[in-house]
Length: 89
Image (cartoon, rainbow, N blue to C red):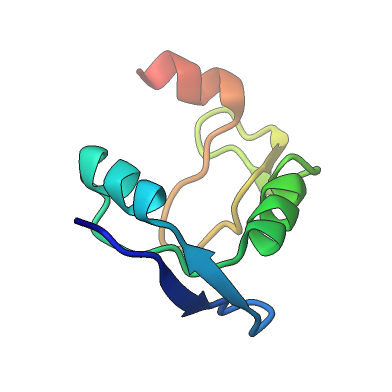
């Protein structure tokens, strides 16, 4: 039913094979997009995700304490420290 397909990695430009069994797995999981990276680039990308996140300095809109947040604060939206954020839930 499925046949191996040769795809080009968008990261390194190398060709890689999208096997018939991988295609069946994608259909089972209802994945609609084909893989865009070879196994080596996928593994390297996953390895980078476990690293330290960049944190940004901010001032809590609720209590006024300085805090660090994992996103760049915008001036048009309030930022809350983790304690105040937790209390708002």
